[in-house]
Image 1: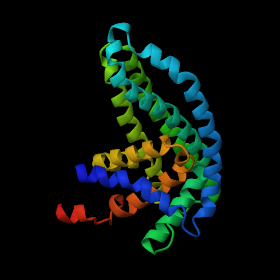
Image 2: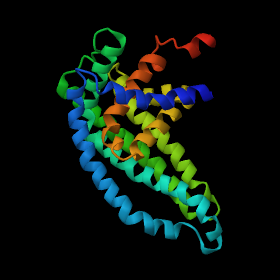
Image 3: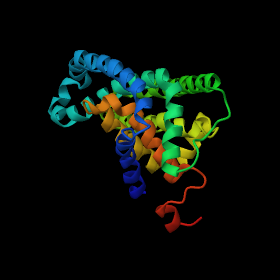
Length: 250
């Protein structure tokens, strides 16, 4: 289980190397420009509001815990802000993520690029609709989690729960691109990732790191698509046979 988590953690960073390969770079330009604009807005929002949020988070009688919970709360708030902007960036960049995933898969497998059988226009529409489904999925689960911050005692665990949820959502977000090229919808992606939950959470953790690191966050979206495609090829597609699989038949 832990080895799966560590394997998933490495894929976003593998994606960083893949997007610099010849023939891949042209498909990275538009997502890069989108992230430059949206993450700049996200940073400004976080800087303006995180201080006030920190002051209101803990009641006065728990001031002695502030030194311990402050780093976790900062990470959780930044994850919420940047994850929201990542979803918006992916909504705008959705028509480009499928072709990027297809080209990377072809490079990794040495075979032809996967073909969904749809026209470019219809494929772009399906990608955008999938992003809207993800936003609905996020909203229905994020609102109850946000309420946990308001419950005394329970709010101490809320940052950790947000981090886990953010990792899960980022895994869903980026795995959808390579899976969609093979006709798998958002529901199929959720089912397949639930079957490999430690792998998915490891991948999502890696994406959280990329999203929160200055400079790297600008290329987090194409790196996430590339890393998720490598994870699909290695471990998630039906014909994948990893070392872990071979050591655990059946």
